[in-house]
Image 1 (cartoon, rainbow, N blue to C red):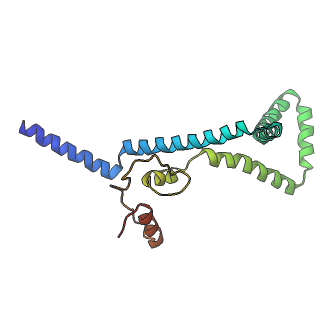
Image 2 (tube, helix red, strand yellow):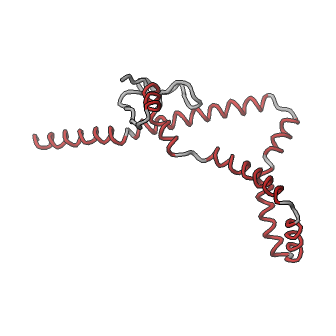
Length: 179
């Protein structure tokens, strides 16, 4: 029995070392869940407010704001359909597009980039930013701070030194650590 308890203690120590090195997955998952719950609550409040104070003009503007991406996407797909169904008409359309000045194309492409790029930025989370959010769960203020987070969030978190004194000081203050 003595050998089993020694092995158990060694494995328990290895688990603790792994938690320190890699972080506690259950805590990360808990913080991600709380973050998502907070975002869902904020979205719910936004849409419940809209539903209660909505008139025909609000509904019309919401519909109009949702049109550009589908219209652009289906327009591009429609060009492929036209190319197959009526190549002569497609050639006429392409010749007409060649008459558009280059600066106008730059303007159109900029607008399209903002429509699709803005959506991509909203939908895609950068892993580096997400890991910073998980590493600093107890920071005060900010859009993703929730009141439902567990207490004593700073225990076990250490500041990773970057070599930049300003950033290191800021991280220490954000984590509530003193030098």
